[in-house]
Length: 128
Image (cartoon, rainbow, N blue to C red; front, top):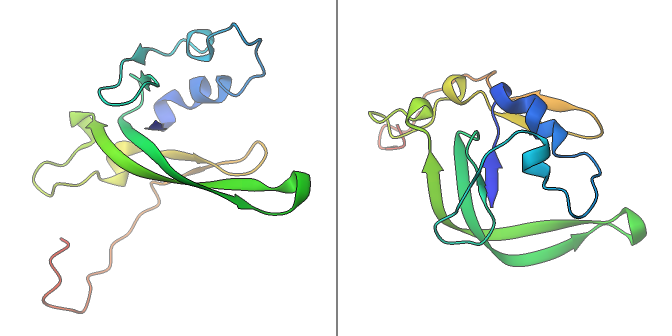
């Protein structure tokens, strides 16, 4: 399960990273709303404008010793996209509507709305 978080719920998303006792529901503690998924067991987060149901395909260890991480490759099974962030005419999610944030390292986060387009020189490209 992957929930794409917008700036609007950044504080609540950050609250879910708190070290809580095993029996404490992190979504409830952060005042977020769990929503049943359609194809996977983990709950979706209602406040996330994009929710992606996935199945793990492969776990790839990266790094050495205790400093290692794991790259997760997953198959996307279903998307749930809020109509407010979806451009139905272009069949895309404009970054300025989504206002997604991303976790960097430590306490750092980034915004993804610094966006620009460049038209491809190939006249046969149909990605627009």
